[in-house]
Image 1 (cartoon, one colour):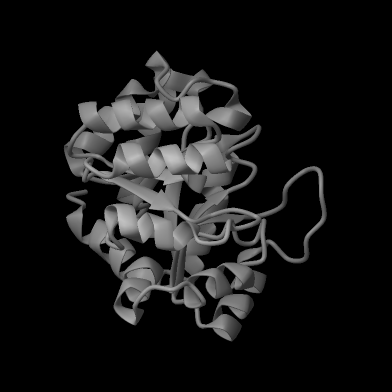
Image 2: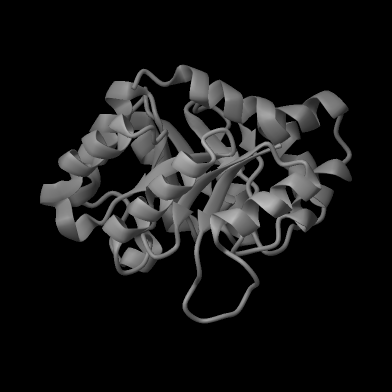
Length: 246
């Protein structure tokens, strides 16, 4: 299993055990998770630089178990180029944007360089989406930056937005839907596979923010083939990594 939407550290307003990379590796060993693609929770909140340093520490300690997303803040647009070049030279594999916590629209001007960078190097951009407006915006971005790989975090979040996401994304090859969420609607995985196939759906859990084990059950118990489950659990993530040119 490859968790394409994971985190690192603590969140400010509720308790969960662990959160450090040593605790995460222990859980990953226990459940058979090969690797997790991480961004630090403090990075999507108040301090992207500290967050990226935390991720760097994790990927250097366990390079086979963690892959890093570069978290960017739209309020430091003049630092984005420098941060991307620095972090990708350190082995990061993608970009993480969280318009919700940063309170900045995903198509805002201060994100443009990040999309251009992803388009140039065919690297993944994981964008937190929640609501129909976010879904439509990511679709428009994917149509414009056709070589970038857009991962629609939470696939829109609420059920109406998730159903919209799969309809709009079915003909856009550079959009991937992820399954991250605290709950899963019955039949939604089967619906996704029926609409767009299993090749553009990613296993994601929000680990350690959310316990990853229920998400494994959602995929394993879904009424799709074992081959389709393998695509979701790890093959699609492997493909995304193989496409990068940075």
